Image 1 (spheres, one colour):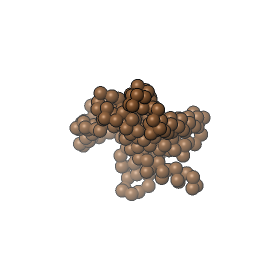
Image 2 (tube, helix red, strand yellow):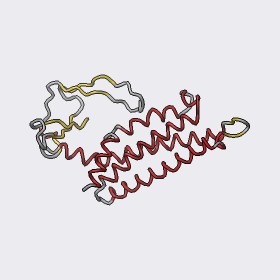
Image 3 (cartoon, helix red, strand yellow):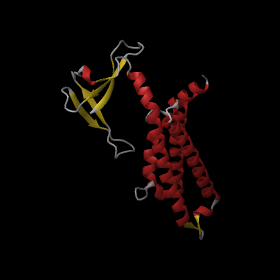
Image 4 (cartoon, one colour):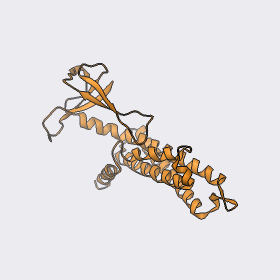
Length: 215
């Protein structure tokens, strides 16, 4: 089963999309190719093909023309989920790098003792804590039923960018080993990028945030 939002009005007209439930096995619905993705490969992504696919009005979600507004409401909560995903990736990469920096010795001392490495770890730890607090703020507002468009966008934007920065630094700390599949940080590195794209790109989050603060 899938939820599909399609145009039901004139192009560029206001309120011209509607949401529908499309059940598996519906005539005219078929699956296309599976995408060969950079990361998040455990979560399969494939195209959906509609060929003369007719959907009963009983499968409509909400009112005709309200699909876009419905999707925007869902996005506010979905952005918190992506923010949490990015935070988890960042934490995984940080913890792996932290442990490795204590175990890997160069010049008779762990590489964690070198300022170039320890400062990276300090930045990683600080940004992870800041992302965690932004997510908790957005979650609190959502749980209390309060507006959280700005807060969820901030959490998603910051956490996803942190995931990319932390995983990149983690690969750097691992050095050559970080570029191999024998260690986990290369996967964190690949997976992190989707967080800056899914549920609205980082650029879209900036647009949402700026609109909110300029109201």
